[in-house]
Image 1: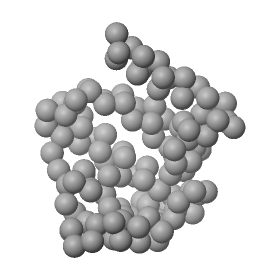
Image 2 (image 1 turned 90 degrees about the horizontal axis):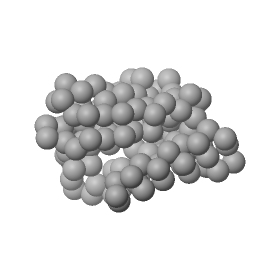
Image 3 (image 1 turned 45 degrees about the vertical axis):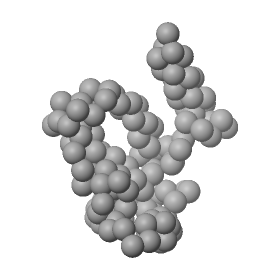
Image 4 (image 1 turned 30 degrees about the horizontal axis):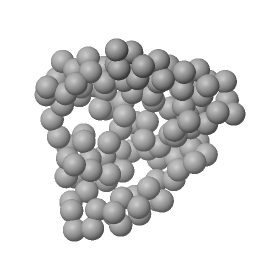
Length: 121
């Protein structure tokens, strides 16, 4: 949500995240951005507008370094009157719905599939 990784809360979650590190993600973002400013809304949606954004479902993971910025995005979406649904993964890591070894992930993936199937009708 913010490629600058400047949110101070990320430092707290960084110690709990088993998959990502602030240093690694920031390095990758800088490499991929090239000459583009990391605050450009195309790579850092928090710096853009959520006005007229479509209904959104977000799967937030408590132990994901992107969690603090995801929470800010949810607040910004609500302020812009976006219909946003949050599925919270307590103590879950980054991309938790795609980790089939955990029951929470299996349940989340079933929910994602259900949402997609309902959109097709």
